[in-house]
Amino acid sequence: MSWKRNLGIFAVFTGSMIGTMHVINRVITYIATAENYLDKDSYEYYNWRFGKIAYKKKGNGSPILLVHNLDVCSSSDEWKNIEKELAKTNTVYSIDLLGCGCSDHPAFTYTNFLYVQLITDFIKHVIGTKTDVIVSGDSSSFVLMASANDETIINRIIMINPQNLISLAKVPTKRTKLIKYLIFAPIIGTFIYNIKINKRTIAHKFASSYYYDQNAISEKDILTCFESSHKDKGHSKYLYACQKSRYTNANILFCLSKLNNSIFIISGNGNPENALSASQYQNHLPSIEIIEMNNAKQLPHVEKPDEFIEQVRILFADEE
Image (cartoon, rainbow, N blue to C red; front, top):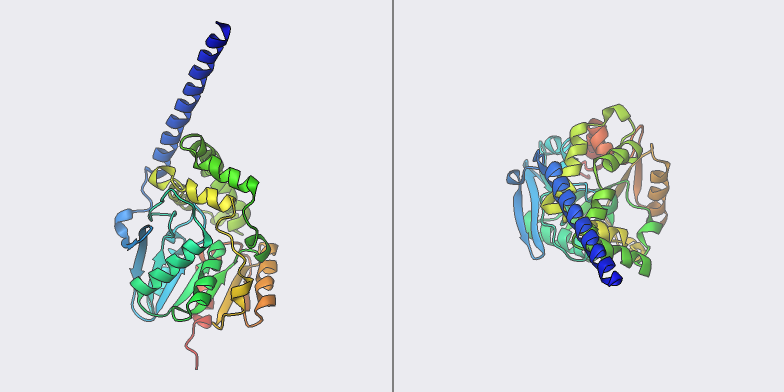
């Protein structure tokens, strides 16, 4: 009889733990999204085949597409300091990638090619003409691959601190696939995600990687990222799991040689690794021009918008 009693105690304990995790998950989601910094009603929506894609359109003139960093904390809010200025001379589209911000967060495997297709379809069906693109961080590979696959959709490209080519080429392994399955789990996976992605860890990322000037970090920016990472009841965990499992990676060396676009990299020299990553791209495609911004880290367009806009105006000046 003792084993039945022990089994009963274990079942009650396990049920209590899972119930507690579920309550904590719900509370975190409520706290993260209560202020509604990302107003869903302020967006237009593109009904893509894999979900609704939130975007904003401002200004008139030749189009510029702004693509935020691929991170569950990121959204088109990343461009708020520059899109108004760009809209004075251009039609500016800022997009929330699938699994981010106010776009849908479907529960499936996110891959690099999924985002290549999203960029391609959005340009063809929403913008409707060849466009310049400014892309941040880990999303850079999607834009390069989309341009290599279809030369009719993208004109000039500015990449902001693109991902290291060596880490980008790493493929999923048995260990990383296990991480994906664990985080995909309904309650326990969400609990793990909430431990990894919370206000404290986001604030640490701002201080260590995003900003050079610690005094420039805004509490509202941290809370906006916190909200973005917990939209749709924390379903951003599916993208997070796929990134950690390397499903969003791709070896893009084959496509670099196919590109004949004007391509520029803006690198924040406050992170030494940014210069190393930029030089990797230039080594494989010597025509790439690298511009370093002083006293900036991962988000120079957020931290130093005026200087960033000045660089964009120079790089995107009409060619003679």
